[in-house]
Amino acid sequence: MRSHSLAQTQPNAYLPHEAEVVKFVQESKTIYTLYLRFTDPLVHANYMYDPGQFNMLYLHGVGEVPISIVSDPEHEDLLIHTINRVGRVTRGLAAVSEGQRLGVRGPYGRGWPLREAEGQDVVIVSGGLGCAPVVSVINYMIRRRERFGRFTIVQKVKHVDEFIWPERYERWQQVPDTTVLVAATQGAENWRWQVSPRIKVMEEVKVHTERTIAMICGPEGFMASAAEHLIGQGVPAASIYMSTERNMQCAVGHCGHCQFGPTFICKEGPVYAYPRIKPLLNIRGF
Image 1 (tube, rainbow, N blue to C red):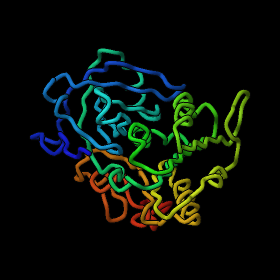
Image 2 (cartoon, one colour):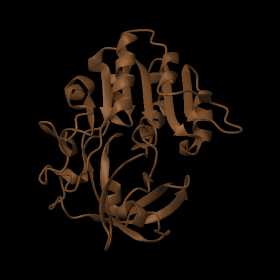
Image 3 (cartoon, rainbow, N blue to C red):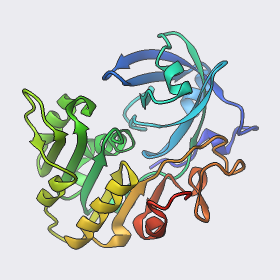
Image 4 (cartoon, helix red, strand yellow):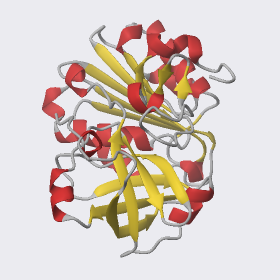
């Protein structure tokens, strides 16, 4: 697994590298995906990252925003980011066209514990529009299925229009020893998955051994509830990891905007072991 990054070697960590928008895909009304390639071939060839890390995407004249990387570092040549249009910068990025140039700084943070997951059963849980940080993990494990035990993928959304990439979940469901559970709080016509309130879908997750590792992303309340349910099923608390979000502006631990208790998410996160951040979850101001 590669952990070296341009962010660790470039002379000024605040200066972005130029990247071209090779492809733009509108996934839903508010969600879109950017496929990027660095314009400098040397930068593109040397760029390395781990699933779970993020980049700072810079739109000229608008600003910069942290976005998770969803591509597989070893199987995809382009740098892929799936983005929810929620603020000034993400609205600006939603209007870019193929061929346009952006700035990219990164990668930053700590990714998912993929080495530790080898040989273990794996449960991936995502809630709401928070699925992007785990897509790279799912793709990584599906492509290397023989390295892991039983694989469970859980996706919970409020509304069916928040469920993107249905064809991927259909495809993942066909992989041996892989269980896919999808549920919406509110159903709709032709919705083939579950309709369930809260995180009731977690009751269908089967934990077969203590050698199980879980990776969760989504709203903090959702993540905490899912973690406690998994602990009740026998998953060790230390084997549960979460991807957190905060307002990151510098990504190098200087501005303080992403402080999370005694840690900085841009440096020690966004992925944390659950026991490390359990006391901080759902506390206003943290």
